[in-house]
Length: 355
Image (cartoon, rainbow, N blue to C red; front, side):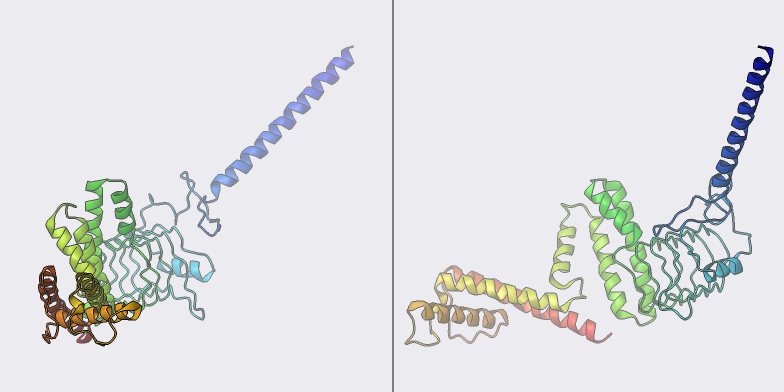
């Protein structure tokens, strides 16, 4: 009995020791997991750098101040090792002449959702760099090369783009402020939407001015339309100024779309032609006097109405057809609007062609 009791005690001790060993191994495995950065990008890449208490490494931790660190060469070596810069937290860093050009490849390095807030990126080389979703807010991009860079969903509020190369940039669909502004408007958050629209207007104006200085007038026109659109969104929906601004946008795209003027003119001429046709104005002086009945007669009468609408819109007024009754008021309004529209087309067309 005594020997059995001693054996049971020994077995229990061995079992407890084994349990302690397993617990130690589990704790070590947990420590190893915690020691590795928890950042994972949208492609499934996991950062393997050592992590701090936050679970993030030096590069991905926004709480670590890197403003006084010399990290330019480390970043350049990072991308040359084939690792993405996605999610890098580089606020207030000094990265003058940073070279992130992927030489020998048409696909640039990935630097998505990174933070360059107030970073000094003077003369940085970002040719083809994928910066989608990144924040370049108040960053200094003086003389930086952004040729072919991808800037969709970026935050460019307050960015200094003086003398930066802006040719063939992939601006994407929207800026970060735009997406948030549209979301706020859909959710009826008026104050937030107005503030975000103001930021979007400021971003568009900044880019437009820089493009005009560099002679990139096509891009400048695109951002001018965006600037005016988000200025309109700041106005109350019942404001007459907002409706006038909307009308200018519809008619000519704020002076940037001559084709809109042409399309509006053709649509208005057709609508007036329908009115003249149903009011019987086109029955006078038919195209072919011998054909006035049947389906062909109706077609010719409508074409006659189109002819009268065109000469009225262009204010030629040959006098071969005279409107009567309600058609006179329609003709007077069409002549007034036609002269205004043609003058608008000349202004818009000359503006586009003389750039």
